[in-house]
Image 1 (tube, helix red, strand yellow):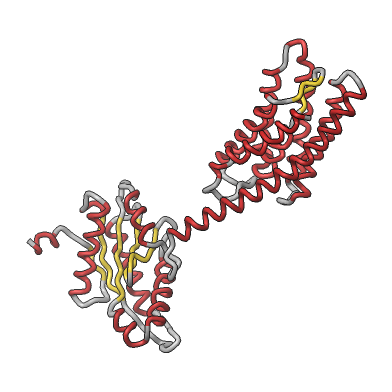
Image 2 (cartoon, one colour):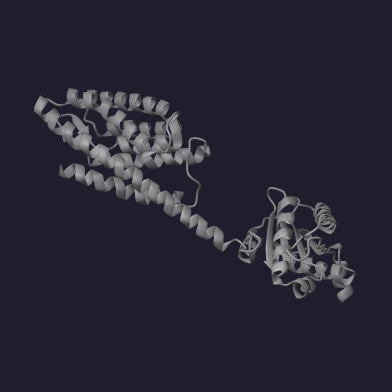
Length: 363
């Protein structure tokens, strides 16, 4: 009984610690990236190995809670994760078994193999519920009991061990399911808080912090990267004339418009006030200019209705910079800012690409 309780505590401690690397990732499913599912299988296998090192030796039988990590691997990662976990268990079982008891290791391996095959089929029709989790644990118990009977020398020993084995595995399945559900809720809350910290509350776009972080990490691929800095023309007039609520409506709608024009790898964010920034990885200066012009023309021909002004129109000015003319992302941002002010000084509602000529003119 004491060994089962220790096994019980070891199971939940290792689950809590070893599943921490998944805290910043979406829920693992059988359709998740291959490497993630392999990692899940390895982690579940490690938990099973730790349980086996604390297993109860009854005659030549080794009794523990190893079927629970197998169920975890199958429920979340599908047959591939379960296969990795099963292989780790089988290798460990043979490593722990003396040569004279090798038949016990072979029988245990057969049971694990049949167990994984069965619950992998069940997983195709199962949902992420307590009932289905416990069903898989129950299948493991059903497969294990005949093996325990064959490996024990007396009927009374088998009955005593079986009752404890059934009880602790079912309880372990119940608590494990709730522990994993609680961990997932905790992880999702962390992810939500991280997202809030990186999101502009008004527009739902990336905020200044996320943009600055992305600028510090943006790479210099063969085509380099480009930046487009955007400012709403005469935005103060909108706020002064129609109120700040109308100004907020315009900011939200402009953010939506810019996001709709972005490519999958682009990052659109509100850089501050009425300024927006688009980070364009692997984008030449010429392509960035085309994207800027598309944004400018789209904004110019669309309406930005507010409660008081249903037919409000705005324009934007844009400054473009490319990494080829800068040494750091900060310099590229400063160059985009200079190009933006050139657009505003020369009439607004236009986009300007930064060139070295700007420096010569200032000199």
